[in-house]
Amino acid sequence: DAKTTQPNSMESNEEEPVHLPCNHSTISGTDYIHWYRQLPSQGPEYVIHGLTSNVNNRMASLAIAEDRKSSTLILHRATLRDAAVYYCILRALNTGGFKTIFGAGTRLFVKA
Amino acid sequence: NAGVTQTPKFQVLKTGQSMTLQCAQDMNHNSMYWYRQDPGMGLRLIYYSASEGTTDKGEVPNGYNVSRLNKREFSLRLESAAPSQTSVYFCASSAPGSEQYFGPGTRLTVT
Image (cartoon, rainbow over all chains, first blue to last red):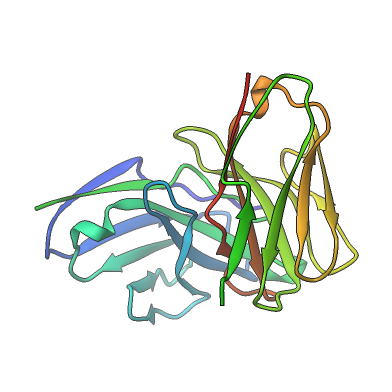
């Protein structure tokens, strides 16, 4: 299963945009890019996913590079509630997407 | 909808004891998963069940057994607990190919 690489931590100021990068150079054509986040003492929650095109939802935007070897999760205006660990993962849907590998993720710190 | 529920929330075991972690989902999802998360680490897949009646090993299955009791329930059993199994255990469920929904976790300490 393809793996992803993310920075260990990032810091942002409240109400500023945040760009969280993810590298996935060994991504295959059938891998979807998923992002989850984990607030302190909670289970992970789904944020967004995409295959090739950029995606937007109420929580965030996902920008996918043209060669699909990297992606960026964009939080348009960070709030203190966005302080969490963000995981970028690949799901191989041609094999059911079951063996999802979560790395260590990026811990986002948000300053007031 | 309750989503994914897990019991118990906390548990302390002595080395060698056994226990079963329970998980249930009310979203009619076909697939269910068990993960463990050690301090400061990401999640590691223990077992998953692609659909009712099937189970498969994940990254770290040793020391665990699972049962997909029905479509709603997926349990994780530790037959002989070891200190290395001290962790937070998360259950999740999903529709085929869709996002996973996670439970609140069970914090297990083995002394």
